[in-house]
Image (cartoon, rainbow, N blue to C red):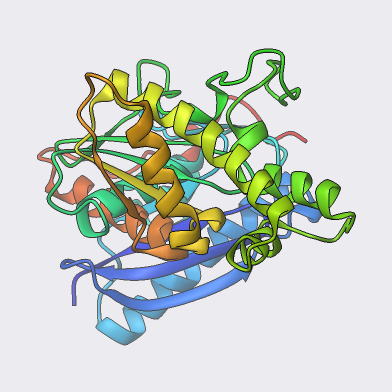
Length: 325
């Protein structure tokens, strides 16, 4: 059976799969990223994991994977196949496409940014299926975004498109890691809600999920914390839809697991803020934590659907920088 290898690399864990031509997950596996061992070891773990999947595919389906796709966090140069920088993994300028291609016998390899890759899957086969234009916004430790247009993800001229988490919604607000103050992700991410609720409740171990439960039970302090986050999120989303005019707005990540505790006030807050803009459909993500892996598989199949796609060059042809801490 023809198949591709898909890898989704996270800060703590990696998800991998063999994906069939119709998007079916034929085989799934998970492994710890092991970032505490350093960037060199992480890269080797990725390469070894991919090689194991290739061997499994050969044994199970009688042929090697036709291509591979890998999604990684941080700054990614997808065109050159380089994982430029990832703070949580400690690497810089890793020629990931070339290294994987060499380890996998020269098959074509696609490299993608984790959020954009997850957005690709949500747009094509998940909550945005059928929408010609969508915006995918996962609310996790931070907030990012993926802009979907015609079944593809817009990366921008320099690979930074969709960084909605760094739109300033409260000038002079909390300091953000990017150097600005009042960025959306400092106020409406799951980690931001966790910090606010821990302070308001007096429980340093309280998190966003606890806040959502307290909101559902009618706790007034929790409702205030939650509404502050919803209002900030709505301000950022209205800015995005003013610029992008998406047909569908897909909200994912840990905060979206609160269900209607989030979506009911969020839809109301966005609707209250629009004037001339067309209100998009606001829906929860459908694929959960498999989105990145499925998206990596789609990237791999896209390579095979592109005429003239060549196999990945050997690492020795492109390795101009070393993996550094």
